[in-house]
Image (tube, rainbow, N blue to C red; front, side):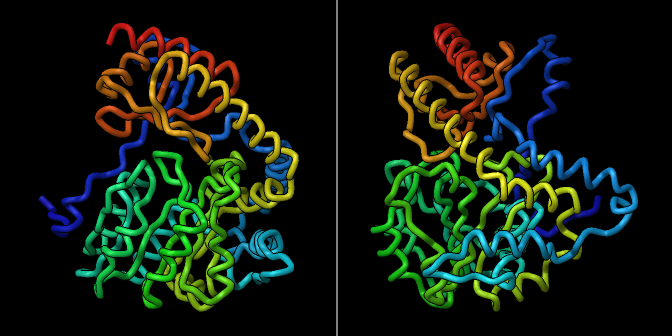
Length: 367
């Protein structure tokens, strides 16, 4: 048997869910509701879909390689994030096959065997997977009050630390770290350590005390801010995200980035989605309305949850989460168990949220 490297063999692979159609076939159910992957229930903007159709109609373009540098999209992103106080040029932007690819590129660029990366726990599982894949060590610092314990994370930094990951908002808890604690953390962060600020859910944040990582970046700090078109922009199936950093950091990442890592359809769709402010606003409003409904319903049931700055809710159970997951699956409602007694539920359309609550209440009585 071909044997992988020791540090690779010890990694638990990410386990994706089965296609909804296959689950329905296996369970003999129809019209199931998927609330497990934090997708935008409205899907992409109509402008993005039109851009895809227009591109496809030019058959010859599909047969050509995509723009390897994503020139137009990177320009549009740079323009969107720049303002009177901060300017970012195209050289500060890198595109990825989802922001997921970019954190993996950053790890391969700056880490090797024996290095360490500090991260919260629980948080996005891919951080530790990426770190372990290069033979480095993931230092997981337990959350405090369901949020990153930035004080303890700063204390966990050693001379071997190369990267610190902060998911803000955090996945799976939906919480944020605020300006004051982030400012305190940045004072303690060594200049030779890269901070990867994962802001995949930033569009959904309503708390005004949310920190501005781009401000620290404009001051010359070593930060890679990651954002995505998979969540609020509804382009999860096209896999496109972006990173913002100092040009010299972007230049190093580009040495590892594969040529043509983002395809033509994802680029044209993301460009149109970025410019469609109306669709983004509708998506955010729908999410806020859905959270209010779910909060009220969960309060009435008497189930604990964590108020969220994202498009999902972290629910704390008194029962086994996997038993509940399987019971709800048989009823056609797909959620995500993320701990022994914790589940994560995506905020869906009004009728999907209502279906979740109806099934959730019924299943809680029997499991």
